[in-house]
Image (tube, rainbow, N blue to C red):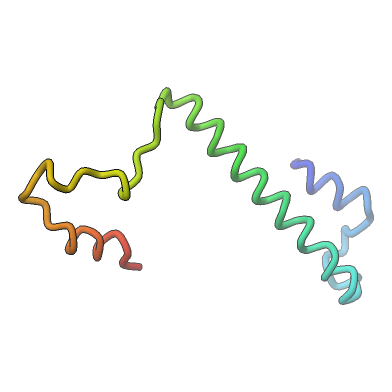
Length: 82
């Protein structure tokens, strides 16, 4: 059981959101979203630490002149496609 599930049960929200009024939901959702974002950030930091990667290289840092055969426009179109 995750910490959020423990809190949910401790606060007696066991019945789901059906028993909550609109104001409570509006106040609770940002807290849960912030917790989710913090967990994602911790997970990424942990995985990067475990991977041994010293530096993250972004596409903006890529030296496109190193290989003239690479077609930057096509590559970026592929990266940005859904």
